[in-house]
Amino acid sequence: GPSLKKLDLQFCKKIPAEAWKKLGDAQWPNLQEVNLQYCFQENGAGAAEALQAVASAGPSLTKLNLYHCGKIPAEVFAAIPAGTWPNLDLFRSPATETLSDQEKTRLTGHPWRGDYRRSS
Image (cartoon, rainbow, N blue to C red; front, side, top):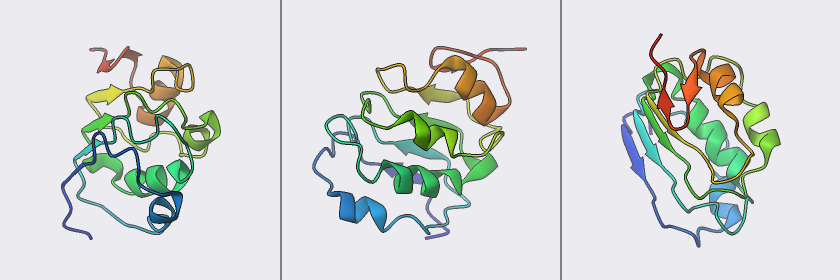
């Protein structure tokens, strides 16, 4: 709900797509940290809804770990509006080319080098 501040589902590879899809309308305005490492390593089904819910955090989000989530399609990131996460300091990417530093810059409004926000 609205009071959720931290979501850690690291290594939860077996969450079914139906469960992720229920998150499509979730609103988490106070969410600060999300760890979905390995959740979308084997399958990207439901990733759009999961990241739509994470996007609802907007400026509250400071850490997002999507490491080893290589099955998240590039279109999922493209559907998130520019500047959604302006306060993100740590952004661990999928271990694929689905999320470039340029796309991270579009999503946050800040330059990136790898997983870390580049200082101005």
